[in-house]
Image (cartoon, rainbow, N blue to C red):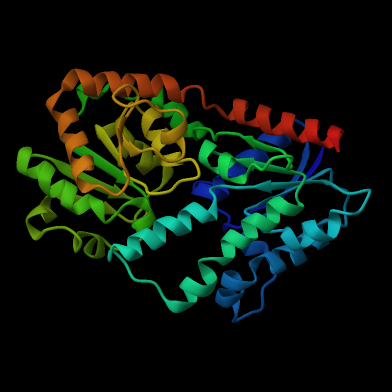
Amino acid sequence: MQILFVSHAASNPNAGASRVYHLLTNGLRERGHTVNCLHLNDFAMPRGLEFPAKRLLLPQFASKTARKALAKPVDVLMASNGMLYPLFRELATKPNRPLLVNHLHGLSLFDHQATMNETLRGHMSISLIYRTATGPLPIFWDNQGERFADLTIVQNGRDADAVEKPNGKPVIKIPLSVHARIASAGQRAPSIAARDPFSLLWFASWIERKGRYYLPRALQKIAARFPLVHLTLGGTEISPAAVKAAFHPSLHDQITVLPHISVEEHIAQLERNSIFLFPSLSEGFGFALLEAMSMGMACVTTQTGLGGDWLRDRESAMLIPAASSTHLADAVIALLEDQALRSNIAENARVLSAQFTIERMLDQYESAFEQYRAKR
């Protein structure tokens, strides 16, 4: 097959949405397909106006760039989160065209709801332009992408339920895979019994949607019960001082912040720490959670993305309600008080994560492309 992918994220083989496209591009090429992939930094946007163009007109510039790439024949054209809806609308009525696939990393509707809920609770403030334009627009782009596509691919059941319509176009769910290097490292990672039980890890951008507001209050409660506890925060993308400012000063010596870390440093943290904190309010899937599971950590997470579809409370993770410092703290304390529970959850999570291989993900995408090309 001749395949063109278009991602709304800047190219980064080790980060979130972009990583999905790097994995698919490299894996499908190895299977003999001809694959080209465009990322955000490939879009031709007006110099000096990149920020407003990205916030308000990204699908138009993505479509303009993709049209040029279609000078060569393409069997499958897949774009993330409605990025090519203007081009999809143009191609939809043409007889000799690619299979059009709308790929949802996470439904913008749920991300926006999480942001607005945090605003209503007074945990953050938003600008008028976000409230009226840059917040709602991605929801519109998602909807238009699904409207003009032949097929929509999602990563979790909640998104599938929201997108599916009676007598509508097909929607399928395909989970992500563990990073190959992390999967390999997980096979030789030390057991949780050999690690410091009081070592906690958070790995996410320091933003409200990741549940950052609830972490400082939870840590204060945990530290009151277990004074030796230590929290490492990786991939925050902001300075240690800015992160620590959210915590009580008495906790600052028990916190390490690593704003930017390599894959090797990420693996080292996953090997070293015992309990992984993932109190996210909205996720498409949750790469970081899956990789912590594969490295044998006991995870505390909300029922979003991977947590909502595949995990069971006190079996493969400690599942907690979203937006609750109390439940986050209580779950961690329960793990610290019960070594058997901590070890059982970590081992069950490691076994479960082994199912999420790159081969399985490639099989499912390849099968979907072939099946729906034939149907169309």
